[in-house]
Amino acid sequence: MKAFTYEKARTPADAAAAAARVPGAKFVAGGTNLLDLMKLEIETPAHLVDINGLALDTIEATPDGGLRIGALVRNTDLAADARVRRDYGVLSRALVAGASGQLRNMATTAGNLLQRTRCPYFYDTNQPCNKRVPGSGCSALGGYSRQHAVVGVSDACIATHPSDMAVAMRVLDATVETTQPGGAARRIPIADFYRLPGNTPHIETVLAPGELITAVTLPKPLGGRHVYRKVRDRASYAFALVSVAAVVQRDGAGRLALGGVAHMPWRVEAAEASLPRGAQATAAQLLAGARTTPENAYKLPLAERTLAAVLEQARS
Amino acid sequence: MTPHPDLNLSRRELLLSGAATVACGTLDVAQAQPAAPASPTLAKVSLKVNGREHGLELDTRTTLLDALREHLHLTGTKKGCDQGQCGACTVIVNGRRINSCLTLAVMQQGASVTTIEGLGTPQALHPMQAAFVRHDGYQCGYCTPGQICSAVAVLDEIKAGVPSHVSADLNAAPQLSAAELRERMSGNICRCGAYSNIVDAITEVAGKPA
Image (cartoon, rainbow over all chains, first blue to last red; front, side):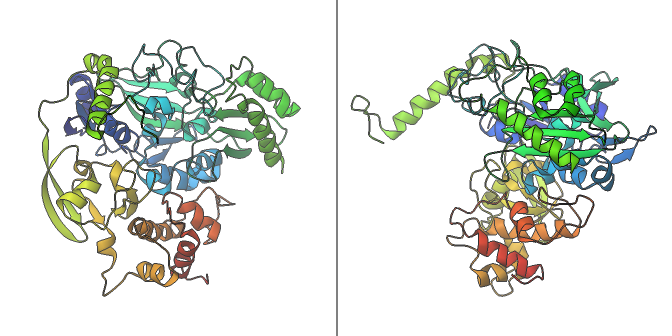
């Protein structure tokens, strides 16, 4: 691990200012992803701004009937919150489908959104990777690509976003709240938060350098049946090959997003009009324009079948 | 693996050449990013471990795991993968189980840490330790301290109503079933495969017949 200097921030504005002031600074909260990447020297911050002391660890009701989730609320606490379990079941389900009990006790809401990909070539510092070393090439395109993205891909990167929580947040139309280095606040709809890889796969979100996530807000509850179904290589503690987050109403209308198939949680609102017509019609629209490799082409029928299972579960 | 006839490198030479490859591969990034501090940064850290206060001066890079093992010489907590995948380093911090390899000691300033040494002693075993012995919940024993710390915390999590991936009803109190215990213990890997005996041990401590 590269040496770094360290400070504990006292307020969100101080944290954002510190991160903008010191070149190569990074925020650390749970650290479950960052520390791992620092050991491998994939992340090499010269300065760490520890934000765990900021009072951003509560979940509060909003005036419009939703919830405001502090950036530092741990995944365990978010999944276990009685309001989340009752009104946003898809979020609770997505959280407990991810990682392990130990990791969920450390991992935070904001950190979960900002997880880096688990592409094996991103992790392998002996191989080219445009996300790790911009311009060096993509080893996954000609390599082992079974876990990789099938929609929204580019010639520069076919990595997936690893989060389960973010897929539920996308279905729930969450909003990411931030503090910028100058102290100004910003609200970013989750639909606009992530970027497709394009030619700059190393830039994963629209956050500016030093911009600190302070909270994630949820609109008022949608009602309906909440389902999160994750397909993976083992029954627990593995990343998704394909996952489906869905909120389905009694009349068959609803909304859904996929995990494990793209550089971001994958939602196509236009495809949701097809939900009452079933999984096949919906999946066809949702995955239109897919670009697969021989190794990950299985994800297209798998996504359709997983969606069919989710719709059946929602009807039951 | 058969050595390549033309490549008669010693292990040391091989490691050096590997390091050079890595250095070349990441040169762009190293140039693009500000240099790390020239010398290691030290920080004062106080930790309450198993009820005892300790003041340490540590390199900021020191994980909680390394602080426990290398500085406080509490070697009961094990280093397995050192990347959060195996659970051998599980300890209880401020009442919650975490992977001590994935947090910096300096981030845990003032924290209260319980390791396997703090749960019980050879003379007075913690009920979970005694149950692991009774049910043969281990073979080589390397993952056992992490398994036991995890298991103690799992029962607290169930009591607190934390749901799991296999909880049928999110709004009901979680059950103490074998399926629940297996799911909740999935962050602790046992390569000897003592899983079924581990579930029996935890079930006994939880007060249900195995």
